[in-house]
Image (cartoon, rainbow, N blue to C red):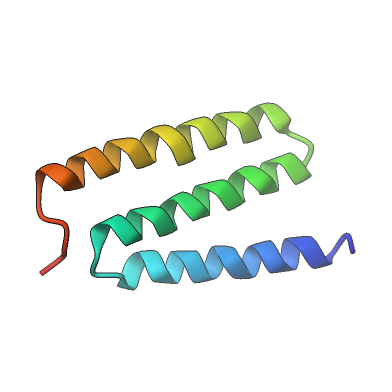
Length: 80
C-alpha cells in the first residue's frame, strides 16, 4: 500500500500536466494546473513536510489559481 499511492499520484500528476499543455479552454487548463499543485502538496505531506505542503496548497492551489482565473476573465477564455 505504501508504494501504490505515490504511483497513482504520479500518474495523475503526469495526466494533469499533459492536459494543462493541450487544453484550448484556459479555465480548464488552470484547473488542471491547480491539480498539479494539489498533488505536489500531497507529495510534500507524504515526505513529512506538512508546513511546505500547507504553503503549497494555499499558494499553489488557492492564490495562483484565483489570480489566473481573474486574469483569464479579463481576456479571452479560449486559446486561438
